[in-house]
Amino acid sequence: MRIALINENSQAAKNAVIEHALKKVVEPMGFTVDNYGMYTAEDEAQLTYVQVGILAAVLLNSGAADYVITGCGTGEGAMLACNSFPGVICGHVEDPLDAYTFAQINDGNAIAIPFAKGFGWGGDLNLEYIFEKLFCEESGQGYPRERAVPEQRNKRILDEVKKITYQDICTILKNLDQDLVKGALAGEHFQEYFFANCKSDKIAACVKEILA
Image (cartoon, rainbow, N blue to C red; front, side, top):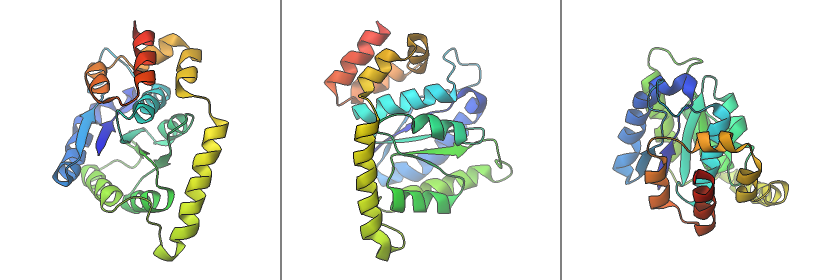
């Protein structure tokens, strides 16, 4: 699994702490982490939580990432922005129980964590425990297990609903304010990671056209 880490501007200073906790948990599992930044609050490429949603959607729809770890001060803005796009099911995760139940019941592909609200002493440990419970088992098995069949059915229904209620991601990217989109894709390592791992020629061509 390839996991993308994305930080918006208000919590960019915590990027190294989050990356350390994430890699500590998932690299022994054989997963790869691509850190798309922001890396510091002073980065030239500044991401708002809205742009986090754009970037997450580009990565997940193109196959450049299988999962996105993101957040903001409360986690709410990043979660709402991510869920504004097709191909993204983002949960709001504050603790390990949230992580486990979201993975098993909702079978999503992104989480938004509050990196300011409640992030005090032991915040780094809470991140580790969140990532452990998020990835400890195959996603979508249901919880409790006797509820697996209806929960999996509901997930399939949601996937089909999102196919109807959302436009194609390339159409969305071209219709959005282009400065907003370019800003979302302006990270220091975006092109390095994205084009090396993108599995969609259509989305790659769309991104190249936008960045040209």
